[in-house]
Structure formats: structure tokens, C-alpha cells
Length: 206
Length: 206
Image 1 (cartoon, rainbow over the protein chains, first blue to last red):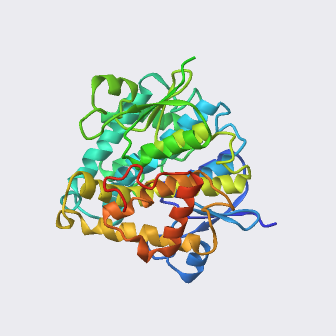
Image 2 (image 1 turned 45 degrees about the horizontal axis):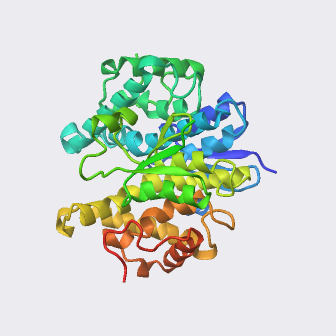
Image 3 (image 1 turned 60 degrees about the horizontal axis):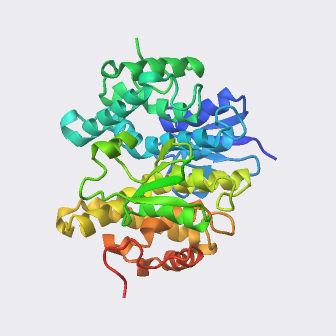
């Protein structure tokens, strides 16, 4: 029996999701820093672990491997308070997690990557990415009009999945001052998870 | 207590996923045909049900609403054989379901929609969609080299999620003769679910 290993890049929201769940639930793990920019997810050694060449990747205690940030979170949080016991609330949590990967991450995380990591200027980036990301933030703003968390009345994996890139959305050129419920919710989740507000950022906040 | 209602378009793979899980598990539901092409997901009546204007949408027995095909499947299949009992296998199933929504549907379903529904020619379509879709089929081909189902040794929601658009991939311009394990697996899942091979297709097979 070996302990859990998490392969991740500390600047990636998808990777940080896994780290935060482990930390919040006091699950011991070895963090294996894996730099996506210098090709460390393309080495023969890493591809033998995950042929898709993606982080985060988890190697479980029994040596078996799980990929996809939201699936790894479900594995780690199994049986914990981060997953609602009620069948409807659990499906609702998954609804937001699938929405995050389909309608949020492909705009907000991708635009941040292009700007903050590839140093692309706004003119180089498909303008649809800004519009779609703003629509996604608008959907979140509506959901948070009358609630403190995405599902039920406490922290769940849906909040962790969604906060990962929302809290760094400014690095992708989005302005959370336009989405005040979202901005308050980010502060709430940062506090719930006891996060350093600069964790994972390229440009530290003042 | 009302019975379940599923709002869906019968040509949409995402909607058919939900129908198939209901049928396979003998769960009674009312199918509310909702035509995405003529704007039936944009009416005031539908937007009151799902403000995102997307199908499938499920109204549960208690009147509560769930969106996102894969989350609805998880809700309907809760406690059934379509979800592995083992914690690792369950995470692995979710891994493939998240991969489907992130890396498969956005190419294979989207290219089919552009060709078969919007009648766009190949020249009008971003060539990246064909390349990315072929890579996704290649990933599936590798996974199926030595196994009959995506997770464990029997049918799970991962197979249902992935077969939905893979079985109609030819309508998006992909040729499954290049992916023989995938082609055999599609036939296997069609049989497991007792599907009419033409269900949902724009162009019936001979």
C-alpha cells in the first residue's frame, strides 16, 4: 500500500481543486509538481501514467489511476460532507460540475491561459471567448442571487469546481465587479477552504 | 406526486442518453418533445423551467429540476447496476463521463450538428473539429483494445454517455471503419440497450 500521489501544476485551477479537497478533508497525499508549460506532461514517464498527458492525475493507494479533476474530487470526497447525501442535491451538484467543464472552463480558464501564460493580446484571442465567459459568469450570478452556495446550504464539490478558475478570472480579462454575487461567493469559498488568495495566481493580488 | 417529465429533442444524443437510461431501468417518464431547431427551448414557457434553455431537462417527481445529460443519468440510475458499487470504478466511470463532455461531445456532436442540421459544407467548418474528433475516437479505440466496456466488465453510464454521439459519428463526417474496436463496441452497446440502430439519426442506415 503506497500513499496517494497527485500529479499537478500548482498554477492550474483544475489541479488546485484536487489539492483543496485533499487538504480540506485531511487526506494525506504526495504532490508531484508537473509543469505543463515545459512539457512535463509529455515525457515518456508521465505518459506511462496517463496516456492523455493531462494533469491532474491521481495514483490511488492501490496504484490505480484516475484522471479528470471533477472525477478525482468525487473519488477523494466519497462519503464526506462535500457530497450531499440527498439524491436530488447530489445530482444537482453534478449538474453544476458538468456545466463547469462544458460552459465555464473552456472560456474562462482557456482565456486566462492564453493571456497569462501564452501572453497573447486581446486582438489575438477569439472574441467569442470573452462573450461566452461573461455569459457563464452571468449564469452563476443568477444562481447566487438568493443563495450562499451552489447546492443546498453548505459547501460542496460544486463550489470547489466553480471557484477554481472564477477566483482567477481577472487574469483572463473578466471583471468580477460586474458580478457582485459571484465576487462575494468567491470570498466566502476562499474563507471556507482557508485559501491564500494568491494561490495559483500568475499576478499576485495587492 | 407527479411522474417524471423529460424535455428532449429525439435527434439529440444528449437527450437520448436520458431516454435510454429510463427505458433500460423501466422507469416511467413522460417524454416532452422539444425541438431545438424551431426555438422550442427559447419559449417563455421552457425558459421558466430551465433558464439555460437547454435540453435534456428533467422535472422530478417532486417538481424539482435537473439539467445536464450526465447529471440526469446519475439521478435516474442511482442505486442501479448502471453505476458500479466499487468506489474506484465509480470514479473511473465519472472520469469517462467528464471526458465525454469536455473532449468528445464538443467535436463529434458539434460537427454532426453543423453538417446534418445546419447543412454546412466541410469548407465552412473549422478543420480542427475533424482532427480533435478523430483524436477522441483514437483515445476510445485504445481504451477498448482489451475490454468490452469502458469501466469494469459490464455496461455502465460511461458506455451510454459515450455511445450517444459515437453511434452517429458518420453524420459528422467521421469514419468508424478506422476505429474497429469502437465500431464493435457501438454494436455491443446498441444490443445491450436494445436500440433501433436508426434512432435519432438524420439519415437512416441501410
